[in-house]
Length: 139
Image 1 (cartoon, one colour):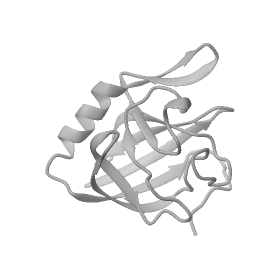
Image 2 (cartoon, one colour):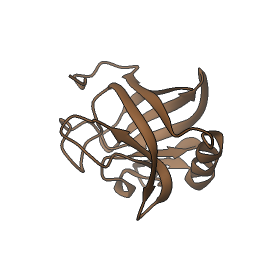
Image 3 (cartoon, one colour):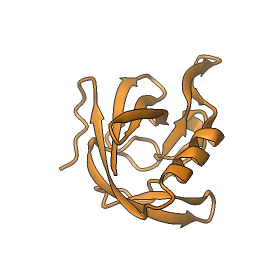
Image 4 (tube, one colour):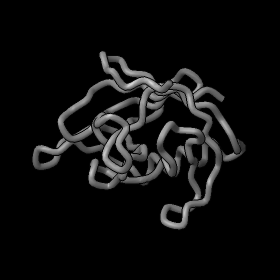
């Protein structure tokens, strides 16, 4: 299984992306903006990461990214705005704006679909790349 997160726009409050699974765009993503890979307030650097099935005490069944430089606990989970994440990857069905803040919609449905689609998968590789220029790259 091939997963690519293509970041398409960085705004003042969030990084917006498209999650492609097996070369097909499946859902949108929202992360914190790039702030130098700082824990809890930044998205992670672009690069290749192993992800594995994980049971989070807060979010339940999900996937966690392994070996993220200077970071830990990077999960996929539900949420609609950057305030809903502390550096993790939120999934949704569409981009939107609420009171000037970037958002994604139908996160619960997107996350449930994500888990169903990956139901037979315990580990996979995720490639994160930017469709715009950024200095955020994994070492």
